Image (cartoon, rainbow, N blue to C red; front, side, top):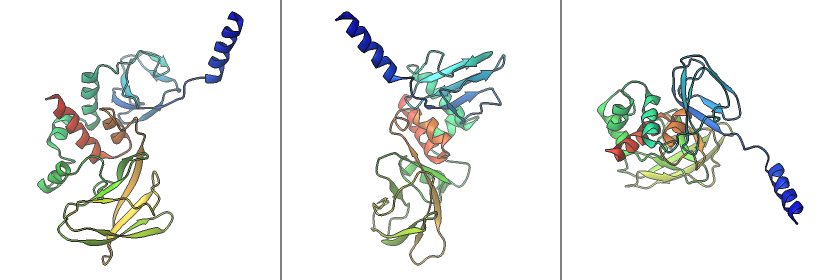
Length: 245
């Protein structure tokens, strides 16, 4: 009986195999090789010279701080994921000097007051055509388009550029939000154009999808930044820091 139990346990371990690799985001770094926002595979060795330091964040929110000289797996060191204060401080460095102040103010970039006001008004998980080249949604969750001026009904056309597919939509008066149509597949990395039916000029957006795990908690700021969803990353960082006040 005991032998059979040992055999079953060994078989389970063999079937399980090695842990699946995940992508880690560099949130702090003094290394030129591992720049902030770079994605690093957890199963690939990382090498740091004397004096270099790198902090990485996993989709689950665990942070790994490595100090050179170092060579080995980026997750070999014990994770500091429970230290959320350290993680939130690291996230501010994603936007360079003054990142915390800019994020807390709700501004997406230096520019007109109207631009900053729009960012404060827009929920994080909204797609705003023309606001940023890349904009993120949560994988498997509904996507929602957003407009500032909701005073009138609008007939609009949303087009998938690569596949030359388009749908006509009615944006109701009084509504800032418009749900993504079921008839137009949402593809990670695809370029979409939105325009008024009677207009010639379109606004573009590249849709990027984040896993549900990476899109929850403070670590979502790192993933939004790494995917190029700048407005959303700064907006979410402002919310994260506001909770701490």
